[in-house]
Length: 285
Image (tube, rainbow, N blue to C red; front, side, top):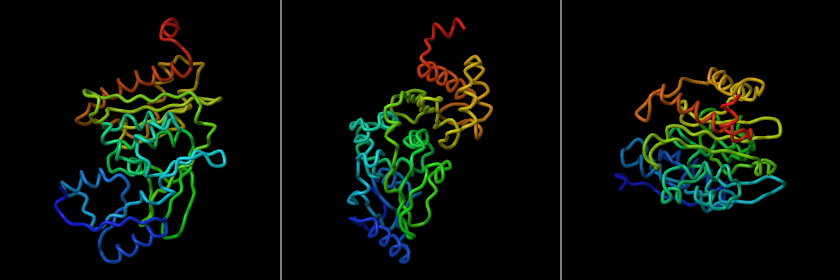
């Protein structure tokens, strides 16, 4: 149980949700938007999160949409990770979502909740970064639609009172070859050591990471190094790691040295699979 009382609201439009947040904030109730609620419940038990009011966005139609509109796949922020996986609408995103927690938890955890999580992993943002997706955000100033790259810098940069409504991904990306690999130190449902997601476009392989540094990221400089196919793959990987945006994590899940070792081997397997090279041929190079 959560050891404090809070008020619960369920708006049916984005405007109502934004107005509720404004009014509750003026009353000093420290409102939070709520989609799946797993993080509020979990952290509420240990008191780092103590909203006096929660605003459940699951009744807002734009937050539960799953459709193709104007050649873009639109995914509502209140869609559960299980729904994203089972729908097969965006296979790479579905695979990234499938690695989060267990099935029971994924039935409640949502796309928006994962992307906005206080936990560092936020794996579901990786496919959005790889596909240069856009996001629609509602807030006191109205709606805005921007590139994910403009508003995601380690975490989603939202102004007070704003919330993620849905993502938009060009449908041309959906059928591209992809890989999604999650490495754990021990169990199948523990916190991940690292996650690598990648797609192969006509021009290059794009790669995004979670669990390597203290935040999820996609690095153009790392991609440039990894796509220099005139060089041996191991050298490309070594050169790519020079451009990591922050130090490799060193925590209870694994040391920095161990993470680096796992990352190198994961990149090796991922790029070989997307470039169509077999391990046997690679050994002969």
